[in-house]
Amino acid sequence: MAAANSHMGIVLFNMIAIGLLAAPWGRRRASALSRVAGAALVAAGGLLSFRSLGLLQSNYSRRVQIKPDHRLVTRGPYARIRHPLYAATFVMYLGAALMLGSVLGLLALPLYVVPRYWFVARYEDDLLAAEFGEEYESWAGRAGRFWPKVRRPRRPGLGQRREAARS
Image (cartoon, rainbow, N blue to C red; front, top):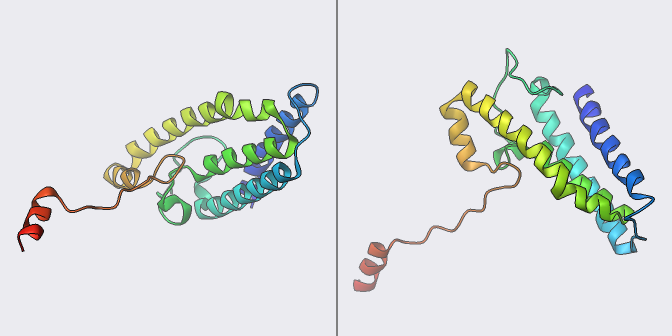
């Protein structure tokens, strides 16, 4: 639970900071739809964050590191997303900006928040690849960095279609 409090504290502090910075400029009155959509995104991001932290258990730390008893978590949200905590953070930032009507908050997401976490995620990916090798590579091939990978439906190859046409 300490991990969840630590992570959520950091995220909430940053969302409040964006809201306060946006107060003097770059803030518009948010519509009711924007406030409701924003609240739903913050709630969804919070749920994803808590679920992800619950699966990490003792692997979580505020500092990027491999712990002595570290295990690669590949179930739950991690089955489809390698960094669901960061994805949850993006969703919560977007929700907070919509709720506050913060243009600055919306601009901060692609200009600061996503690039910051992208670099941290790359560093984490390198550490995990070095520690877990083939197991990590296999998982990384199935799970997207921040969003689930889009898989195209398998279609029969040209040779299979020709054989089917001949039958």
